[in-house]
Image (cartoon, rainbow, N blue to C red; front, side, top):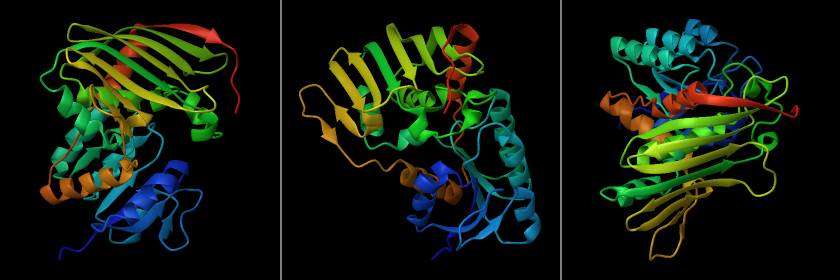
Length: 308
């Protein structure tokens, strides 16, 4: 049998503890060999305060998974690739499109795997939705992605700073699903961003979109309390397909809704293991490109201040 891939997890915040660590430990093709975080790691794993410290330690590592904020990712990726490591990146892959292009170039030069992951694509019914839509004519698109930032990103001020994405941090998950399942490319034609006073990033956004000949309406908001809304609805010549709860529920014409347990991050690490085994990268910047397009065409409306 092939030895497990020795993986270092860079960034040990909420998303790492809630999702990455259980997924890594549940995937037999990986072993969690080290963590990197200035605030500390796990009691049973070698812990380093910086990637430089890990690379200088001589500790044997095959790959890294980056669960850090998008700003500054390019330098981390460059160091890891130069050290001969395969790299997986939490979404969004970087703060800019130019950085994503450069990371892909560096991975190709190094002959190492780069995986820009989009965890919502690992939801149970995203693949089934893509297959059902193939060959059908899309007549309309509605995306509603509303959640509570205080629950999912408690106290994380970086979200509203430069490079923090604001409501597009969760909203990009919806765009990652849409770009995968729709038969035709998705374009943003207009946008309105609601930006809290004193903040750099929007707390809510309304986008007008188009895919093929069909119009689309996209709503992002991170002020929603109570039940959360993560819906993608696609009108077609054969009826409406809907993904709800982020892809854990699918509704198809003439069939009862189906539900499955979310296993997004385990599917990401399974895919990363397959990529490493095949020596093949998976770099898809389309969701980030749509966010950049939205910022380019958007008007901005100030709204009341926001504080955690």
